[in-house]
Image (cartoon, rainbow, N blue to C red; front, side):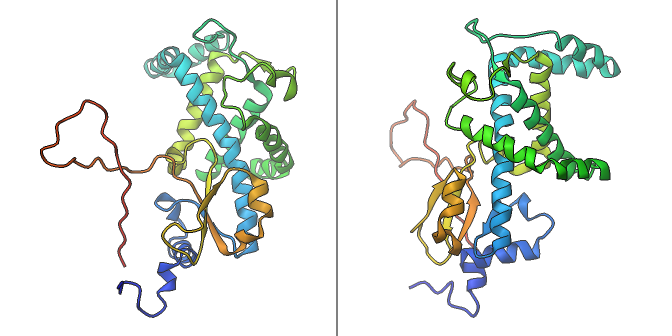
Amino acid sequence: GQLCNHFANNQELTTKIGLLRNVMRLNESNWERWFPRAYDFTEERQIEGFLEEFKSTAVVNFVKKHARYFKRTHGEELGEVKRSLGKLGSGGKCVLKRCREVYLGTPDGGRNLVNMKILKAAIAFVKYKVKLRRDMLSDTEMDKWTKKAARIRKLYEALSKLVKYKGPPYPPEVFKQIIPNCWTTPSLYLEYKTLKVMREYSECYPQSKSTGSENIWVVKPSFSSRGIGIYCINSLPAAALDRKLRTTVVQQYIARTFLLQLPGPSGQPKKKKKKKKKKSTLRCY
């Protein structure tokens, strides 16, 4: 039988809640750099923190999706803008001014439509998060964003309606359903600005590179093992109303895990198809 967890007070390491509490206590300043964002649902304060984090992550993911879409459809043009800014230095303002007058369509010649009101508000929120992490916010700016908490909640309500779509690009029926009269083609400047703010965000929040853009969280019962009782959520009602969650840890899903490409059996003929990579687990007590 297993003897690795037969020692006094082993629950401080071997249970999910015990491990989370000790990681947060011992590495209060930088535990997020190497441990996925997680919340202990046995504490009311942690639940409230998760609800706010879920909403803010949804806003960030909205900008992330648009950044990927712009890079996928206009990567060559955006790369040229970045190279021009690097060469010109202080003269880059002229390049950005010209970019404000450039509007690009889709690769197939269609209109490239995004909801400008939601996107600009979401970009402003991501910039706030970057400044917050870099300790660059003045007292005036901090008060400004504190008072605009209600605006962020309204922004999330609009975003939640767009979550079910794979966009951008979005289907035509969305244009009349969600904040009409705000759907238009963004300038090349706004596309560049979207990519730039997401690069800055990734530098400040390294986990954003591995969590994907679907806002998925894993619910883990604290006192079970071998994956029993684990499931995923991607909406707030399931998280906020289910009383069963009160004895669990809710952890952000790692969409881009570290995978190992293992060699196949000896003597097996080589195949041209891509080798499958597998997850791995390492535990040390």
